[in-house]
Amino acid sequence: MSTPTNPGFAAGELRVHDSAETFAATTRALRKTGKRIVLVPTMGALHAGHRALLRAAHRLPGAVVASSVFVNPAQFDNPDDFEKYPVTLQRDLDILREEGVSLAFTPKAEDMYPHGTRTMVHPGPVAEGLEGDRDGHFVGVATVVSKLLNLSHATDIVMGEKDYQQLVIIQQLVTDLNMEVTVHGVPIVREHDGLALSSRNVRLDPEARVTATAISAAMTAALYKAKDGARAVEAEARRIMEGEGIDVLYTVVRGKDLGPAPENGEGRLLVAAKVGGVRLIDNAGVMLGELPADSPDTADDSTVAR
Image: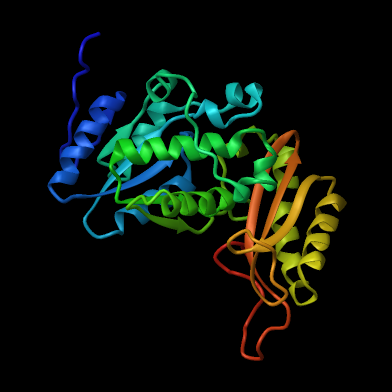
């Protein structure tokens, strides 16, 4: 097999690597010169939410921003979902160029998993329940992110809060595996009507798109039940969504680290629902229990549009 041509690195220019070998060689050389490499992993179909992640990466001092575009088959429990996942590579590369990304990594599955899935990373209890009910999902996520961090030689990784359980898992991953990587979470980006941006939104037909706005509306309303505790918040979010004909998969309040929800203090409301056959997730910060008299609100304004 011939050695792939290395596109290398050039300041101010996007260099596209489709080979793990050349990507790793380039990032290794950059680290040896003391560069700060900031990884923004994606599965493509980029939108304004991804642009927010890339801009957050650029705000880190001295950042060389690298972004992966890889639809990871190991994290799909449903082959149909994998086949339907939108692939828009050329448009994605245009967006990466517009956002000043230096390195794009666009591997094929056989390059990421040359020996198949014989070695996988199991995140443990934090990956159970919620999105972890999708068989093998977070094993696939933890494995591919571990590989991407190794290949990119990243000092930092930037991820969105919309996939909140995933964010917590990656924070745990770098801590428990002693990776010298800093994890940065970026608040959810929303449409003008409150719907969280997602690559899946393009699959909503016009009627379902309107209905889907009830998810963030239900969450906003439910946060005002926070003084009555976690169960009240969960029940109110479910009641409102079901009233709009939404197939609710779960409404759960956990602690901010995804442990049990506190009676008083900071928690996280996490929601999954199907609208028009499309699976959507969302979440919001919530302050549970009785608040101090000087506390202005029960909600984290960065996560749910008012």
